Length: 154
Image 1 (cartoon, helix red, strand yellow):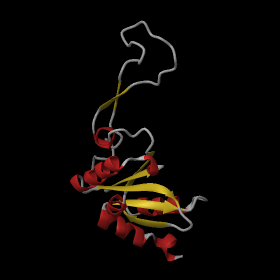
Image 2 (cartoon, helix red, strand yellow; image 1 turned 90 degrees about the vertical axis):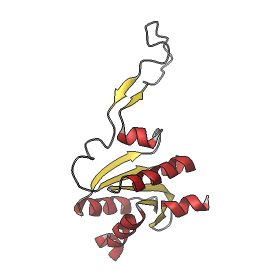
Image 3 (spheres, rainbow, N blue to C red; image 1 turned 135 degrees about the horizontal axis):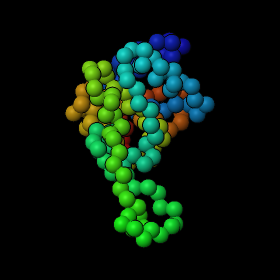
Image 4 (spheres, rainbow, N blue to C red; image 1 turned 135 degrees about the vertical axis):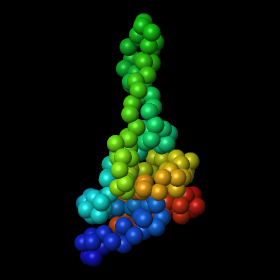
């Protein structure tokens, strides 16, 4: 299994495409080995879920607002029933400092729409240090393809 030993083919495909769609066996394990190989190659890795991502550019690069979940209680204060907006730092804010390449690994990527996937692809083109891996679902064997070809097929 030279693929899992070095991860070189995966890293070359990621650097060439900028964003990859990953299909991993449901038992798990292979994707964490690949992430560990990329960290050893100098990438700053950020692992997060694609659920609740919203606008990828604002979530990853800009100061953005988040409302607390509505728990059924009615507030009579200035926050109304939906609560006050809390300002949240960008998720990749600290990783953008320095010159190291940045890896964004998104779990459960099958919930993202084509527009959100295209937005992630555009972010990798605008910020050349950013590389994105989106786990798109299960497969019998570990395989990947450029995210762009995954969008073209849809």
